Length: 364
Picture (cartoon, rainbow, N blue to C red):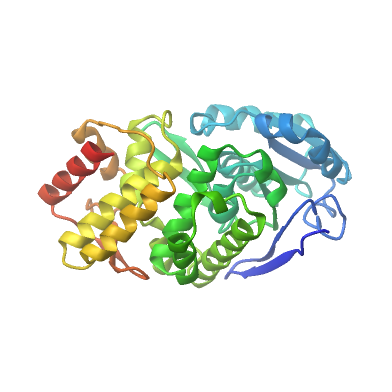
């Protein structure tokens, strides 16, 4: 029996769009409305995902009036200007116009990259997201942030470009590797810690064995998508409240930049960042020891930290100094007074920061 399609409507100051969540529902005209009025559609698709789901993807590519397939290599190292120029040249060669659209089919890298292309081409054409990883389903496909990386930092060059539609199909999770489930669970856990109470309860009472249960994971996806949508609706351009979504990311992005986006996933870097920023919160007298134990237990239970890393401290500090959230040359953190009560724009004593990072890296 077909799983019911859940629908969330995102209403921001600049745009309104639907997020549909279901299983094998995309290749129907009544669902895939985001491309039907476009003269041409560039489908930017993960090579890996296309290899696994070619027949299904072809079935909805064929729904476009004039669909053109652009296969993309996965990996943060491919979110760069050189690759962007190559794709934009391809759009021109295929005759895309201001009435065309882009459809991203893949994980967060593909979505960020394709959205960035859509924001630039002809001064902006519509983007439709078909996220295929758990991380993209609960995070990067929602909210309109699109970007590419520079060597000095992640997502340094980008824009806010809200999607025309988000189609989240849990069918793609049937071939998702375990490490990619962990990658997405880190962001789901983040949402639980900063305010999505039921998600936190589910992760506390649940187990790794339940993660691939369609009902369990569908509810987690829906709750995370609804929570993030609610935050973005109140603060589209990250001028205030939306900054809570950066919990764990100040340290996490610095780790990713130091590692040159190789050898560690975004989710694992954020998990390390949440551990560090939670420990800073505890030492500030906010989080209790019981809260810290709960955070460590969930990180351990779901294996969200898999690797021991030993980065050079000065390099990590330098990468944090380039973080786009900083103001007035000061590194800004999101900290927790308690689960469900994040606080933004927090500066941390440098000696304390070095001490906490040293202990987290030593124990990772």
